[in-house]
Length: 118
Image 1 (cartoon, rainbow, N blue to C red):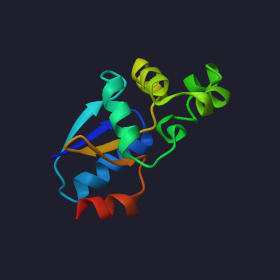
Image 2: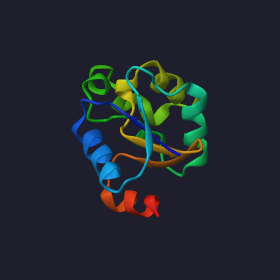
Image 3: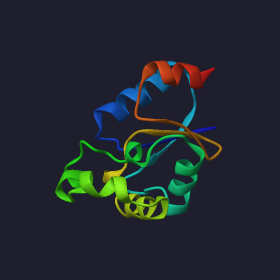
Image 4: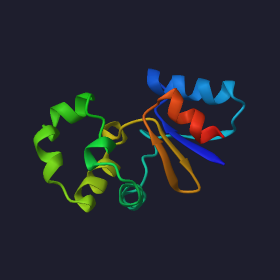
């Protein structure tokens, strides 16, 4: 079963969900603003992926800019980053697609989703 961490008001999240629906792919949705992933879950995803910490942050979000995170994020440890992200779902890049606790995708690119759906 796939899990989509999303924010229902986000246009990119809506596109991802619509694409999954159009492909008849069953997905459990979790509102990441109401129920953000735990720090332990985020740390697990960061450790298992080859992605830089910055990719987990919603760098275009208002919260990110308000908190001046552009300068801080490069110096954060995995622990610090995961705790910060878990504290506010609006800081997390979305949507996040997961299968069995394994991170598949951050953000939405149809070509990435096509590979995942197979």
